[in-house]
Structure formats: structure tokens, C-alpha cells
Length: 123
Picture 1 (cartoon, rainbow, N blue to C red):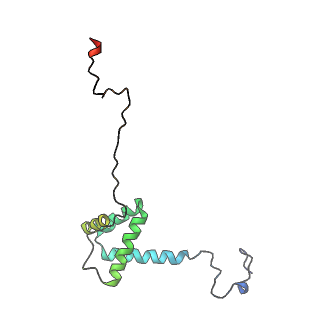
Picture 2 (picture 1 turned 90 degrees about the vertical axis):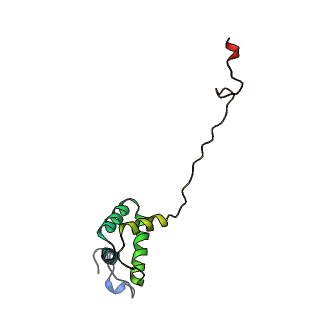
């Protein structure tokens, strides 16, 4: 009987384990493999830039990492990824188009921009 969960190991269904880590080791191994592949297929400056981007935009960096690993495993990379090529990939993968803000001012009755305000009544 396991002291932490209170379940005997014979009660665990087939295909399941009593691992308390929740599979964290597998995720760490996969992450280490991805980082190793990226270090091999990228120049040092490009790899450093990707790591800095990962701090700010995790989702975008993960998407680029997955794309690069997929290209590397399928043999579609002609050589090492340079920093300029990484920048092109980042700019080309913009999901949302840039929004343009248009400011529209409202005219009120007492604005000084009125066309009939010529100050003739003050003389």
C-alpha cells in the first residue's frame, strides 16, 4: 500500500502507474531534445534572440521552435538559421493584422472651430 495516496499497487489498472511526478520527466526530456536540435540548426546569435523572445512571447517562440524542429527533422533546412532568417520568420508569421486607430472628434455647439465665429460682435 502506498503511504501517500493510500492505494495498493495491485489496485492500479493496467497501463497506469503510481508516478507522482505527473510525467514531468518526459516533458523535460522533450524540451531538452528540442533545445539541442535548435542549438544545432541555428547560429548562436539567432538562438540567443529566440531565447530572448521566449521570455516575452512564449506562444510565438514555441510556434517558431516547433516549425524549426519540424523543418529540421524533415530535411527542409538548407543550412543553419541565421538571425536575419529568424527575423524574417518572425515577421512573416504575424497572425493578427496590425490595427489602425482612427480618432474622430465630435463637434459641439460651443467649439472655437465654428465658421461663424469671427469676433465681430466684440467690436
